[in-house]
Image (cartoon, rainbow, N blue to C red):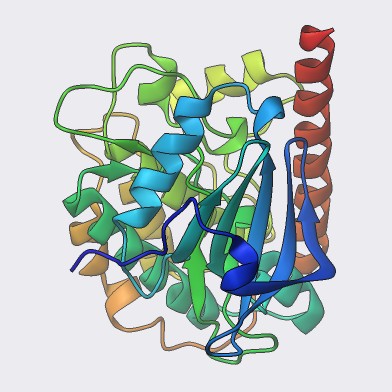
Length: 313
């Protein structure tokens, strides 16, 4: 059923009270906490400075896609208010913040935790792919928790800025985060929903080890490794990881997209179905490695932002 939204030309203050609490800030947007005046429920309000958006059609594409989605594991769009200078995007408020922060806070993590997370992510991907939507930017930073300190780790997939409707005709645009990008994007021969499944495999590898399956000092070297796709179970992190977990990764991180697991196939895999019954914690170096990875990702984002700003000058 299609969602009903207020008229985008109406005043946001008629529906929501905006607080000064900032949740996040980027180059062209800031996200603040808001409150629904009818239900008193807290929401996230993204203020987009339209003059700073490079391509308005990209923003329109994201809004169109979010408006068509209704799934428990995808961050929901509540309303849009369009003014001359600012576009207000009202979304579900994810009080638990980034999954990464929760893992670091816990200081321990198990295969069962990873299975619970992947089951939700893959359920969301199966839904999106069924609707012909490719996310194209799956990464740890885009997995957000509904509640703070939630033992059940209920999460939602966020950031549809690079998402695209896929009608069966190959997509061509090279995009995504280098560490998670699939070889079919790099080949330049066109791609589809399969690229999300490669990224899901990278995510599972990260969630079990705190390390990346492919890493190099430059993007050029990194992309060479991705194109070859040789999986190495890095020690000591993978020494105690189950064969089931490794099997699922090896069915997702597959260079040939026609041989890669679909979301529907992944949902039937024993690692997902049995919720990886073992609650044994992962290698003790897991959290340290994850923090190193996060620092590396933050640096990559900062470098990309700097390069974009230099290009504009």
